[in-house]
Image (cartoon, rainbow, N blue to C red; front, side):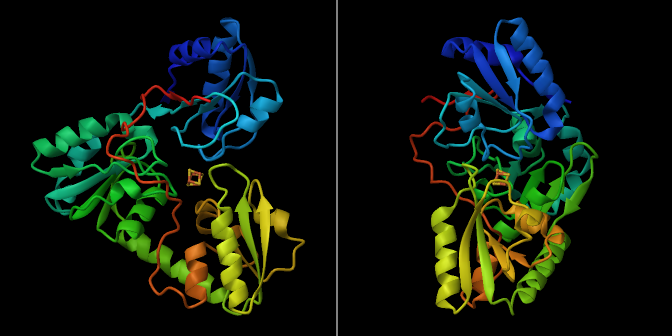
Length: 346
Ligand code: SF4
């Protein structure tokens, strides 16, 4: 279950003077979107529920909200990402109602193997428990480092599937709190440090070394499969937080300089079936790094990240995880946004 602060959302909408809103939600929060919609309707606000699939704050439906004449967009489930948005947007992160300390307590001996000085990271779902986790670890003799992260994340210590800037904070190892493997795998590969993932739901702890090595082997296999490719589709996405046009153009240029045929492709939701009709031998996805890494088995052609394309062309030797980085925070920039949500100002 996730906690949505409906009254806080209503308060923000009243401040804007919104009479009609669009609610965007990831698949896992459809019921919460309905419940929030019902609550807002009872309070005199016209609500439309956005039915498209949504994976991140990188894909806000602000353009759709504008074209529907909505006064605001409510984006559920993800934290604020600095983007140029066309309507006032309230980001309402969904916090998991699971305690993290019991899982840390259970795995204390394993955590000690990381060393005394450790970096602590988590996803937006558990960020409201990061302070509790820090206090628990410090009471158990650790020196805990929590990175500020760059402008793509909302809170110190937060990681995204495409951004591990807050994990690069020094320390002997990294402790990740959360479920799933994609984030801690990215942390392990991006920091090149021992990484332990503690899952607060199951209470399990998993070392990422073996998983990271397996993933890197699979990625080298993709690169090898693309070695004979003569033509490449370089795909970027029109989703606001995934549009990496200059990086995509750079990859096109590099491929051409190395004698390959390369064309720039633009899509919204990137998936292989929509590309079937093209004749390219291989693809480079310059958008969300999860597409080529998590979804490659559904592609009938080799699919690479930009850094993997550089390896293919002999421009890079070491394997590196694809990241979308923001800008560094200035010292006087306030850190973190309100835990109940964040409204951008236009
Ligand atoms: S680009 Fe991908 S990993 Fe990054 S926030 Fe969007 S969906 Fe998540």
